[in-house]
Image (cartoon, rainbow, N blue to C red; front, side, top):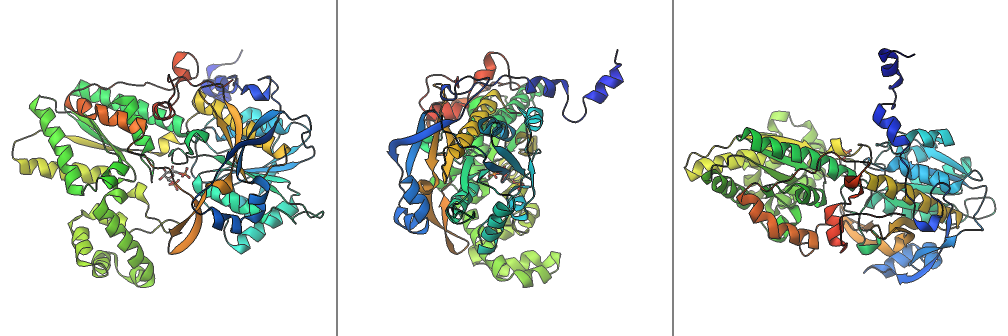
Length: 568
Ligand code: FBP
């Protein structure tokens, strides 16, 4: 009989009671794949729906092989593939920030490929592909990671495969490892990369002159990779928002229990506010800022502070000296005057990079200010040192400001405090700041994400065995049983000016003011500010009624009749 210390020892390396239990969790599959216990790959046919963008002609000129092959037609399943390819060697990689459910894509892919094909994992993301860092994935490997969170099985990174040299390296890896296909699991940029790679590898890689297939899979907790009804949400969003929702709910419960604190919570999502919107819909806090609304209504920093101070004061009048404010991570870049300042700073710092690096720390702010227009220099001088430090900090590998490092929540608390002082009345305002970000990216997937990603893996594998390339694997009809489908990547590309250059991109989907989810928030926000109407979504569940919930914003925006998702 084993002792308790033995039992504890046996739980090391991903064998907690929970992890062991979730590995046995059965996953539903779309009816198209047949029996859930032995899903089979499907074949695809054009659905009659053709995609096009405003830059379609330029896309066709730069991606001739891909566009000629797909005709930019969306594909849907035409039934079990009785003629599925065999002997294929397929590589899979993660790209960008982690998102819950990634491991299940690898599992679904392995199941779809079956014993007649070989699945290889690429370690450390796109960089690993360039370096040829691959290993064969066995059945035991996928059994060990199914339904677990994180990307740690393979690792990830943010390398973009863009230059001729990088494309050449990727081709070398394909030749060295005799690859027939690559699956790239990533966000908007990574799927753009997948389109570029699909075109580059379309032909002439193998000795017989044929190419290597490339399939993208849509990932990001930020929720900013959406394509109408074809892709209502990327995977990882549900898990992240449920984790933040639980934590926000707990804080709301604390505010009403201890009756003395405000909590300003910044939520991850560097460009879009989908995460913040979803957490607001789940928890109903007193204040929710939405970056896209701030930009659209051209709200200044001072206006935002005023609005918050007014709500704090009105609640204080009723004896409510507590509350929660939700703040999107990317807010600062959406405030018009801050956006102008950041844009000018980006240019100035890039132009004077060497000089700036040589300037002593104490003189960096003055140096930067001297390179700005008077308005921007004044704005920079008005900001607290802890914000200025981050505004001047090193850009990320793509030249972007690292917004997650800017303590916007602290800036707002400090400014609201000052504004309340100016109002005159002695309004109690004790505030704590939080940043909920990394906590949500690697949690064990919700049932929604676990089932969704397993089916995405089955879809990606099916596309490969059906000989397709240049598509994004998706699953449609998530409230109606689910159906495998494929979106031609070239049908999503547009041209955007980035860092002074025209680039093909898949545009980020921002929160739209006229979306049903945003309209719902707008209709309830005043009531949630006036009194405590919050609710606590609780911990995410994998069994029972609460397990079957899909994101509220996704249900609202897709016109679903309930919050229940249905796959299989
Ligand atoms: P992806 O777009 O790659 O999915 O990553 C999104 C994100 O989680 C953002 O919300 C956040 O700003 C960023 O990653 C942080 O990235 P890093 O891991 O590089 O700190």
